[in-house]
Image (cartoon, rainbow, N blue to C red; front, top):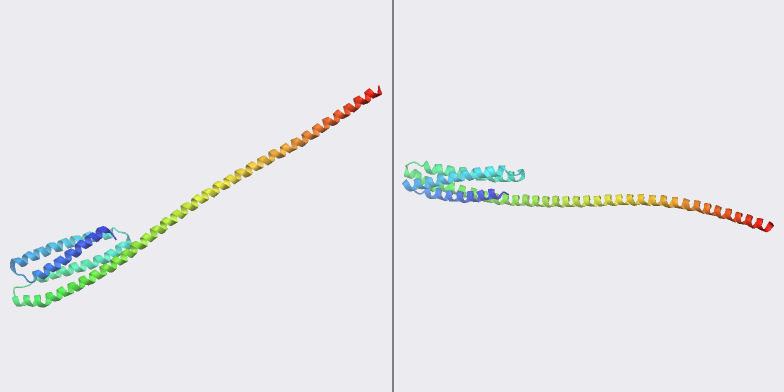
Length: 221
């Protein structure tokens, strides 16, 4: 999950809880004190709306797998903000009839506070579940990245092994060529040696014949 979104989220939850407390206090006040609390509440609502907009922009800039989770949380926060606005309208729209105001404070406002508290509790539970889901998504992405890095490393090793095999194959071809050339040279040398043997043998034979003829002529004369 985006750390920026989490920062906005923490600020909103704190601000929402503070505005809810101010609403509860304002419902028991009159006159200038009530106006001052309402002013503080409206200022808090404006800040809350600003945080909602920032969370919306941040969530839409993230990848789809994370964005869907954050937008679901954002809908919960928008619902909570709308409930706070409704509560403020009820406080500011109360008429001057003391009996009606007391009845609203004792019944309607109490019910609203209970509903708001229950909704915030459900909101916190949903937030925890979404955080757990986000953590699982981050863990899955981390595992996927590690697997991808391992695959890239294996491919690089295979490429290096292939290059080594190609180099060895080229070396073997070079050795084969050298052996072939050496074989041809040895064959030619063998042929020359045999030819030289026949020539030398022929010369020796001729010399023997010449010597015999010389001896023959000397002995006969």
